[in-house]
Length: 109
Image (cartoon, rainbow, N blue to C red):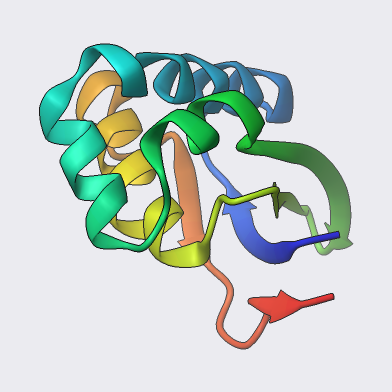
């Protein structure tokens, strides 16, 4: 496991979020601005495009609350996710793709 982030489920399923992450990672080599942003957070763009990944799963949190768990793998860091990948997903697919990030659930495991 890498960095694990938990969100309240938004408008999209775990498999849809996984596909969106994979699509954004595939763009790194073709998008100079994105490559520059990734570099600013200490990752080599070509390595992230090749080895960066995230597992996305879903769990029932009770009281009709469903959570999505995003496990960042390889060179993907929380900052790259939060400030590069996630904003691009939200611009492309809408701000409601994920619910709120759950405080205190971002951990290195």
